[in-house]
Length: 122
Image (cartoon, rainbow, N blue to C red; front, side, top):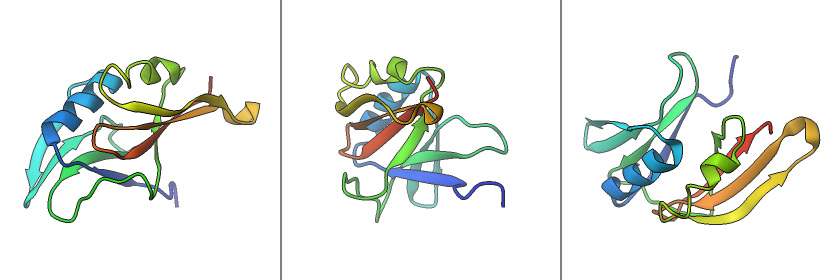
C-alpha cells in the first residue's frame, strides 16, 4: 500500500464562496465539474498523487468537529496562512512548530465552517 489517504472531500454550502476562498489561498483556479447531483471543485494534484475536492450536494455538511484535512503548505505554510483572513477565513492555530524533523502546522476555519489544516517542512 503506497498511501493510506487517496482522496478527500470538503463539504460546502455556498459553492462559489468556497471556490473563491480556496482559489485565493492556494493561488490557483479550481477546475469544476458536476458528478451525479454533486458540484465539485478540484484541488490541484499530481496525476498519481493524493488530491481532493470541495463538494456541494445532498449529505455534505460542513463542520469543525470531525476529521481534519491537512493541505500542503509548500515550502512555508505562512504564505498560504497569510491569505486565509483576507479571503474571509479565520485562523484557529497560527503557524506552530512540531518536533523539528516534522515541520510546522496551522489550523483555520474556511468560509463554510470546516476546520482545515496546513503543513510544511519549514
